[in-house]
Length: 224
Image (tube, rainbow, N blue to C red; front, side, top):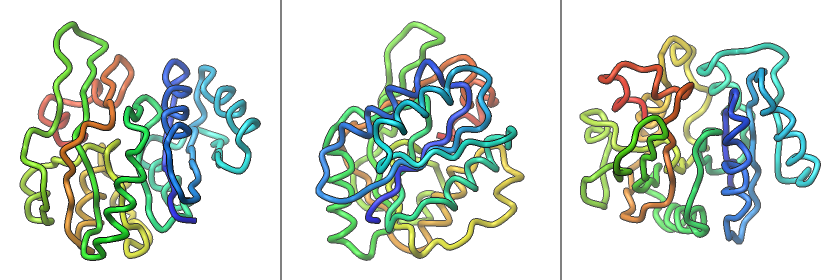
């Protein structure tokens, strides 16, 4: 399997179809799977995923939890189920807006074996307040290393593709954190450089009930 798209979701009935469809619209020349960790939602999220699985049984791998695991344990266990040489992250309330996103990122990583991460800019859409939708990060496109990432989390979660084979089992201390994406970026970056593309190819949705809204202002910019 070339790529696993790792998606975690909980009570995303209003958003999950758009997230899955944005993956299915990708134009790629390789095999991939969509591994969805559905954390015992109390709305209709599971039914939506079941319908997609019925229509795309070879593409979508649903992981339906018998009880709510919590975001971090669901995150860790869903990642552990991914079989791909590469892993892309997309949470159930976000979506991709460029149909060549995955192909561009996989082509880059296939050609640059000294890189472990490929990411890009993302548009932030705040459904809880009126105003512009900023693009993040604003830094220059190019190549970065782990030291840059330790200074600032400039890797938006729904933009990332990891070279996954060198990571190994995730440490248990990941479960003690509020959010695991920044530490995971750092863990993967130990294996190679980070390539930051200039294109805007995903949307990070801010809404009531989302993880972003539950964090303090300081933590919000750490956990993107």
